[in-house]
Length: 182
Length: 221
Image (cartoon, rainbow over all chains, first blue to last red; front, side):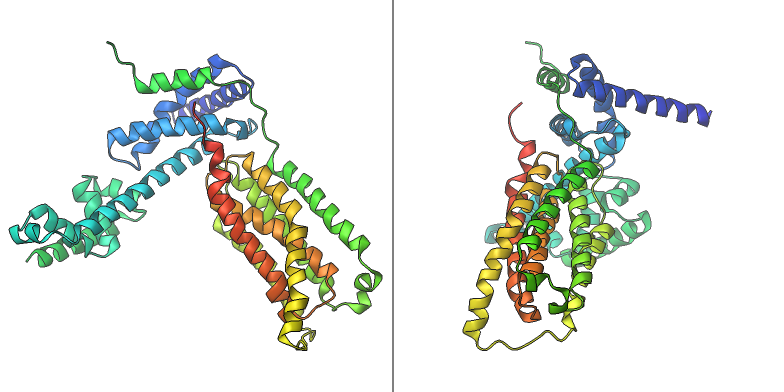
């Protein structure tokens, strides 16, 4: 059974190589078939890194555009997947980095709330203020699990750590938030 | 009005804009070509240098080993840069660290060989050094430009890293040429003036990596 699956995967991989080779030679139909074949694969792969379905759609399209612009660098004597996933990984990493910068900026802006907001005890602003004071790893654990709603496994994969380590970070973050919110 | 699936619309656009493309040569083949160019630059200078500079007895004993180490580091860095311009073949940290260590180890050949001597004055030190900085940069110009051009024709996903790798390889060619063409083997002179050209050149390659190399992704479809 497993051998059958492996053979099917190898056959699919060989087919992709052939389609890409023909696409490089200007065969539009082969290119269309290839893009239809890899688009869902890329989206599935991106789901491991990004939780928001809208973001996944955008990133999958970015990946296809990058594949299009880089197609001259593909060497048909090698499997397509490492080339394709390197591009997808780069697109995802780029997105996550931009998102992290944006979030940090928003938090730093929120860390100095207007006096009125503090006086009124605006809970959202207070949470932002408290998050900004957490160590980066604890803040990341809290954001992944509570703000983005990822599972422990997904969160650990995104943070590049183990489930156990992410649990510990999140627990520390909860305790710190509780203490800071009084 | 019926709205189309954006992914389908994008695939239609990509297929409509997909003429045949010429496949890039493999990194190994392009490396061989570039090394040929670099060797021609080094050879031209070495053969035209005055005899005392080519006479092994008049140069530090470790120079031959230093040149070999520099040549190996240059080839390694250029190979890594060319691989970095192909998605999925980007080098990891260890090969890069090894290539840098190889380049650094070349300095060990002259740091302890007793060639150091204090310059007559600061003015003499500067007057003797500035032409070397300019010459190092000039000798590095062609190999660096050729390598950056080759990288730009690929698809570097990490353009700054790729630019630094390529720039380092090109600048090492200039540095290597100047180790042959410059008669001053004083470590302070080499570190300050030859090293300055390499440092400034790498800084320029960071800028090229940030600004010029990512342009393969630009343009409207």
